[in-house]
Amino acid sequence: MGISGKTSIASSIVAALCILMYIIAIALGLVRIVVNIGERRDLAERDFYDLADRATSSSVFLGFMSEAYQATIRDFLASSETLEGIIITGSSGEFAFEREAGSGIVWAGNSPRFKTGFWLSGEPLYLPLGIDGQRNVTIQAVYVIIDYDLFQKVLKTTLLMVLTALIVAFLTLLVELTLKNKAANKQSIYDQSIHDQSIYDQPIHDQSIDNKPMNYQSSPVKHEPVKPVVNRQASPKSGENEPHGLYNPRGNIGWESYTNDRLKSELHRCASFEQDLVLLTMELKDPEIIGNSTFGEFTEEAVNFFTTRDLIFGKGENGITVIIPNINLDHGLMKTEEFHSRIMTKLPQVFTGGKGKGIELCIGLSSRSGRLIEADRLMHEACIALEKAIEDPVSKIVAFKSDPEKYREFIKGNH
Image (cartoon, rainbow, N blue to C red; front, side, top):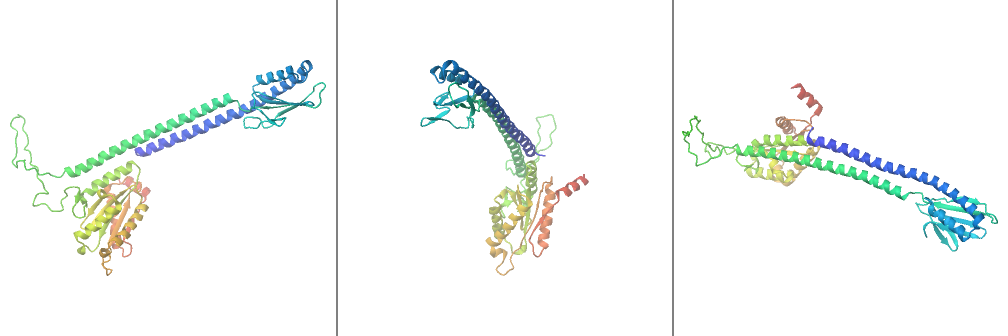
């Protein structure tokens, strides 16, 4: 499993833990608030019964609704932790008391009413009072169902847990991005080294080097003669198809001899990031009517379509090989069919000949399909598919579809 796979698993685990922490934080907060609401209702009922006793007993000594009597009710209300508003109704009218002006009572003309709100109890507490000399005296009260201090503590604790989870998720994301960047940089260096090796392994002609063997006499140690560097490309005996530079002048695409090294590099990179890869091999039939100009038009259309000149290489006299990373076989087959149709449309004079005798474009393709496959093996599969396409009188696009499980068993049986 590559670095990408390991970091993805770690990220999934951390994400699951963060989500679990969110749920726990919210659940604990809700439980504490619900429990507190029940506790405050019990406390409010106790305060209300105490108030009813106080209102009844005080009327004997202070007189019902005297100034001293009303002051006693206000003092009790101020000392209560829960009660917010009180209405006492008697034969002489309705009397309202509240902790702060406008906090629990509203007035409809001369008649007081309890305010409504999510912080106040929906149904007021109610009791009749036995007051001497008064008939039908009742007392009602509303209370605050939420302890604001507790609510703030719960909110702070919940936010702290959520913030902690967010920090952990953010740090995990940073670590994952760092590891992926390191892996990408390492692969880039690896690819560059292969590219440089494919270029600089070619002999370079240097006019300043004498062709005679050289011996170093200043050292007592015997040295072997230094062989001169000879440029085979510049030699009259070398063929015109000898690779020199990045691209082959015929078609302006990569040299065929570079295909294997680049395919190895791309397979290694795709395996590291758990990506698929598709390899296309194409060949133009009836090569006797194909010239450099026609072949150049064909390769330029391929470069424009696949948009990666450095992943397109020559193949034989009249074919090309295309490496397409990060797509699967089905997607690769769709792109191949689209390219085939585009070529027929863009170059009708070449591929129809005007009389139905034009060049035939045959394409074979294969893919990595989750396998740790060698470049030679993948190329062999694509070439087999190409041969089938050439032989098939109807279908000119053939895909080599492998079974990853059977392939792994095949690999195990050969080791």
